[in-house]
Image (tube, rainbow, N blue to C red; front, side, top):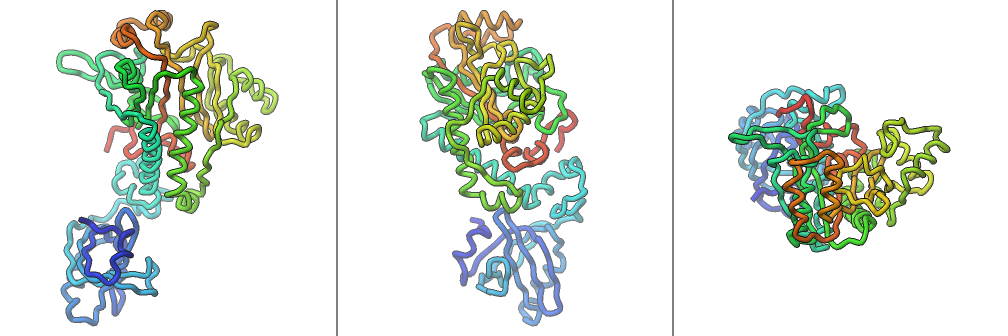
Length: 437
């Protein structure tokens, strides 16, 4: 079982075996210092040249290049002069487990290294301490939100990503050859979340890949990303969905702040702010009026009934100025701008919302339409036919009132850490011009 750097303090004075990357080699006249690294930190290994027994160790280390991996057995001793935790490994055996070639760039200093070059060698790019931390923070955020839902008796599901019909609409889907017919990559688990509720599961969520065939090269879009989606039954209105999302985000951000808050401030210069309930809510028309009055901004005619990127940025500014809050819910979107399965009231008013954080939409949530006749009517209105026939069947045999939402984990992490784009956030980025590595 591997011993990690963050566990070493418990083993001072003991004989240990440690494996890791060779981070730095400082070959002095009388001593060789080697800094070893794993995903949790760094530790120093010290080889005294004056000791005859160390000759074979020095011979081995003379073959080692930086970023090679080695396995060391030796004594872990305390030494106050050592800056890395006041401990060092004094080795008795060293085994080279892999030798590294010369690196194409210095991952410890990424200034001036093109992002696409970094992505070509993503496995090296991730070795950068900051990029390793991104992965760990996103994992922690997911853990916190998962834990919250488990405590709320949600069931985690895993829906198919290969589907037989073109999902929520006929556009923006990837078509694949499936034996003797066509299949598509799922745009979201939306239909299958609702199918689970029709099956009586009541509360479900999923963390999994989402595919969007959008030829978009913005900082916040990708052709594949990780979605955190949930759906739950027996709600009274979309406000129940908003309330649950508030609790979910508070739980996830609290987990991150407890574990990584200080590190995020040190490395990214960002404070992890835990929002308070309730989040502010504004009607879309009132928001437009605030834009006009405060910022002399009017939404372009083609975007009326919805938002655009500039409006989302101003919404964040308004949330801070008017409510001293990081988040803001926007309600009363035009039904024409939303999917057919979003519920409308007796006046045709959409029963859904968007959630804006730090100038970007992170969620579109809603109470879903669970009445079969209304769904059929809405689908026809949107020009959807055979593509949604299988979905409509879920509602023929009874389905409770329900609602839900989805969050892009990579986008959420990008905003949390103040990163410039998803290329920095996603583990392996997929965009219109990138299918490798």
